[in-house]
Image (cartoon, rainbow, N blue to C red; front, side, top):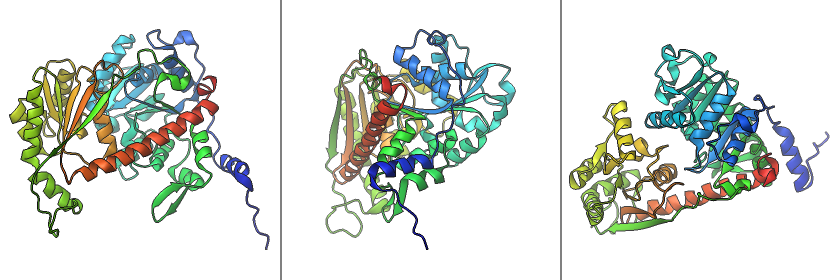
Length: 441
């Protein structure tokens, strides 16, 4: 029996991997610089032109870099009739941004409201009410909704829009928990199935999926053909003028509460999911009162309070006078109040990251407090980035109000933050060499 020849050496191995997944040919078309709205910065216009030409691609740009105007221009230039799917609270903001570009985008809830060519905007919950065959292009705004392989939203979006020729996915957090989550973007865009991507570049062991030995560089080189990661304009060789953040202070606020965790003589860890829930509830009053003290110390500042439990949100609202945007509200009412905070009509807001952490621009606010944390790095990152984003002119103070035991959660989030930053940095490096935009930098 002849033994199959294995590729020898790192370069040969990388070439072997590169041959496994062939880049999907561009399905878009060329547009000239004059076709793009002059309001966009030159680097934003260059991104739009590249994305329109590729036709199926992802924009993984940090918050505040103008993904909304880029995706609107992409939708306008890619097809006569385009659909943008976004979180409900972001839909109205997207309509506002479209007006700045002279695009008469409209928010719609079903195919019946689509009356002809143009850019149409809806929320993810309504996506099933549309006929995908009616659109030449589709955008997933805050596309990290498809990151988890187990979510119904992922399956719905991939299946529903599989026949749309041009697709764009936009998010600042494409893989907040694990690099394998990038495979869901590849599958939505039709460049590779999740199974193909994992089989080519990853290996599964007791620790889960991890990138194969020499596969990391080929993986990011391949992704650079259909995804663009951006932390700041200088990643594309442009000056960072106007895109320097003034600073972020993460301020721990550890409350001293005597806690008895089941099965422990002395409370040394959270004791699993049940233990975490018990600790959070037993420290609820102390944490809420500490947050209220912070608010009252700077009463003239707009304040954003992040809660995880209904009881936390209700108590915070009573103690601080904040408007509580909660899950039982009608979706339209939530969107109305979240935009009212953006406009400065509401000085203090309390809500959950699952409701308000995505896509909204709250640069007018530079004070926030997390009254407890979950293990979701994405929620934490996105929540902070509602205020700490390009366009912010003041140092943002983010207070993390926890009990001493819950500091373990903060440690876990820091690890995830490090991993996510490394993934973005690797893709930026690959983009500089292999993406037509980055190659000029």
